[in-house]
Image (cartoon, rainbow, N blue to C red; front, top):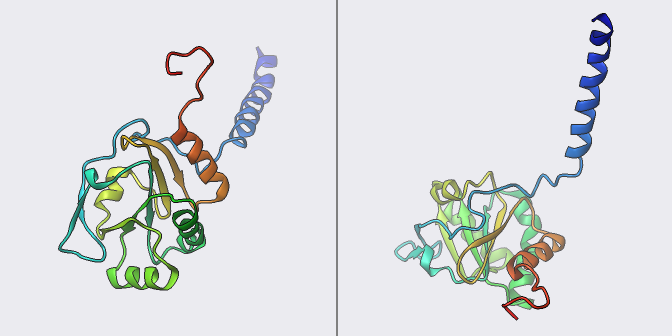
Length: 181
């Protein structure tokens, strides 16, 4: 029995080492979301530029990106040029959610850096962010033509992430002989 106790620390260390190395292969920006495979949550928020105008979930026309951002967010500034490029040169529809921000600061940001968004919703209190279970800005969702969430990315958007989002929006590749052909 005492020999078994001598092997116990080695067994525990081996298991912890295995779990550590498994975790090294995970992408911390790709987090599961209860929204994946589901329609956008129902919402209605004021438009950032015209608070008297309400934007609802049905006003989002996919395929599109839904990007949570804020003027106080340094990573949002880092990804903004890519969003402008996607909107202008790739024809990507992007809906912005100004998340827990001050309206004047957000408007100034868009005037200075460019406005890549089809619409910008003003989520002053973070209610839509809560419905999406946003962990912080920036966070971007890809939604398909039926407004089903197909991809979630936490953090700064990059060309590599955009490529993964495009693949998720395209769906699974058709197999030869499948009925969809």
